[in-house]
Every structure is written in structure tokens, then in C-alpha cells.
Length: 98
Image (cartoon, rainbow, N blue to C red; front, top):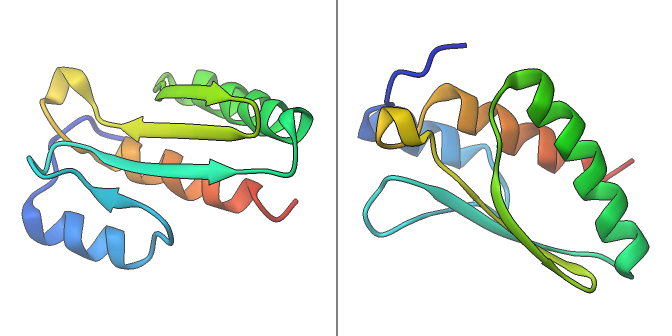
């Protein structure tokens, strides 16, 4: 997957298929708040995402407070959003169901 910055049209198309994700005002990142039933579920989600992110060599900016995980995705060396961010967001969404 490339680390080339996505254009506005590609970002808009990608976000149309990403439930819960929002584009930052500067257009350089996307973010989402995930809320779980408890800390254990939040931590399990983060663990699963961490393993995927490590395999992708692409890591989220995130924080966790009890049952809430706040995530921001951007490819810093590209100066904005890339296909890696979209793929990681899709994987995070897919982990919610199972």
C-alpha cells in the first residue's frame, strides 16, 4: 500500500464507506470515537488493532480512558491521508462486530 497523499475526491469517496469516521477541518486526518461496554472490551479492541497496525507498519494516534478509545489517523510522512489510513480505519470498523 502506498504512502501517497490522497486527493479530496478520493478522501470523500473513502469516507462515504467508513461509518463513524470524520474528516478533520484541515483535511489531513480522520478521527473516530469508539465506545465499549467496559475497559476489557476497549483494551481487547486496542490489542487487535495494535497487531494489525504493526503488520501494516502504520500506527494510529489514539488514547484510551476506561471504555472509550479515541483514534486519529494520518500518514505523517505524507503530510495527510493515504490509503494506509483508510485501510486501518476499515479494519478497526470490522473489529467492532467480532
